[in-house]
Amino acid sequence: MARLQVKQGSEVALTVVRLTERAVVTPNNNGTTTVKITVQQIGVLRTNGMLVPPVATEKEYKFTLRAAAETAGPGLFLTDPPNVLLLSDDALRQYYRTNTIYFWNSDQTRLVPDQRYLSLAVPEERRVSEVVRWLTGGPSDWLAQGGVTRLPDQTQLINNATGADGRWEVNLAMPGDNLVKLARLGTQLAWSLTELDGQLELKIQNQRRTVVDLEKERLTHPVYPIGDSPQRFCVYDGAIHPLSFAGEPSGTVPLAPAVNKGVVSAALTRSPDGILAALVVAGADGRHRLAVGAGADPISSLAPSASTYASMGRPVWLRTANPARAYGLVVADRKLYRFDERAELIQVPLSVPGPVSAVAASLDGYRMAVVIDGALHVAAVNLDGGVVTVGPARRLVTSLTDLSAVDWDGEDRLALAGSAAGRPAVYEISVDGALQTPISEDIGARVTHLAAYPTNPVGRLSTGAVMYEANGVAYRSGPVDTIKRDQVLEVPQPAAGVRPGNPTAPFFLY
Image 1 (cartoon, rainbow, N blue to C red):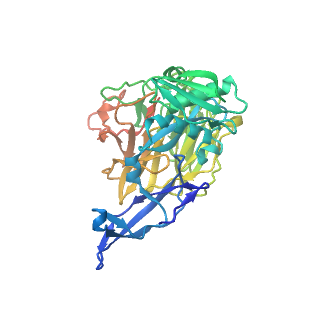
Image 2: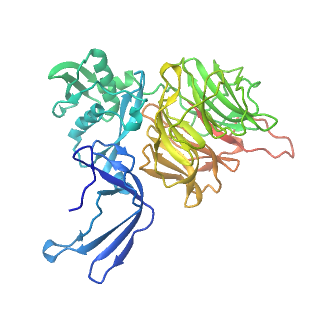
Image 3: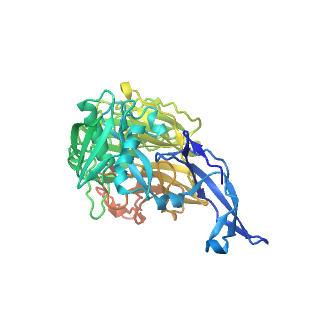
């Protein structure tokens, strides 16, 4: 029998791979068949549902098949299997379901998603027990280092959760438990079990402590403070303008005309105090500066950064739970900076060396995706003490090359622009890099700007949640369509004989 890859004691782990070429099948003279597969190593799937970075380095595997003996019936036998248990990304998608569980951030003011996988062979009645074990076991390694908090030490499930007729019972050992800790755990469970709407009774050492109405808990404590529907904007002739699409709300630009000029790209977000605005503006010399403002709509003044830069990417705001900590991230001259409402830029140290080309912030505000030295990484973000620090970056494996832009288009999904088989493309990638789906493969030019609306359990967008720019032309996904001049609002008709410009740098306000 094949030697199995073992992790964490006696745990049997699956090596997840992506096939990069068609399998080569060679018949042999002795009646056997040799199969060679060329792969990309994606990660290791543990029994706790985590997909961790890959350990194996093999780029190909060979094995031999022979026909089963007549007495065994039809079929094939694997005579020399690899020394690991292999699972393709297609099989991961087919035989496992993705599950989002939630942990509290470092100051326990907002929930942060964490992706897991559960085999479809696991019966539904065991799902509650599995989710509780995931929560008591702690977050994924890259989130645990600065981004989120664990349950109290030695918290564990006693026996399996039991339930019937819309009511579940969970019995725990939780040292130092109190009503505050149990209430936080109840919120975690409500959002980690979104398919359940009944009641969940929490017991500590067989003693009833509290009952959580799961649906009511989600309504009372929304995982994200999202209200109005997202609105689309773009840059046209150096100014921000709203976009209009059928069936979607369009808004007005939350900037006074005096400060809405010279814009290259922008990030606008809603805050408890109004609007946060970060604009990349170009000077007459072609250098770029960041201009930042905050306040009631419309914002009438912006603070400029002290320095200018030869290049500057699309800025992003960290949507943290504390309105007093308004910080954002931006890439300038191939380095990552954080900025505040005064447009003070401070370089952010990263655990991985190399030039930075793109950054994106998650909806919860405590995770980021960043392209470093041409590779995609994710990392936890911590704002303790009003200082932005970034945890160790985890590299994600993707089949895309020449990466140029990234944004979050879901809680645990990224929209990523790069090259697929030598052609510019935009893919959707899971936060662990395992699952990828093409969004657009017929762009024709390298994507230089990308913005997405992250689909989530609170606020949804029916279609076209990704917008991007390539070769000076803006597009939206679902189905892919060019963003046209007549979809840009508040723009006067061009004078006779003047060719109108193209919308560029599209983005969402939410």
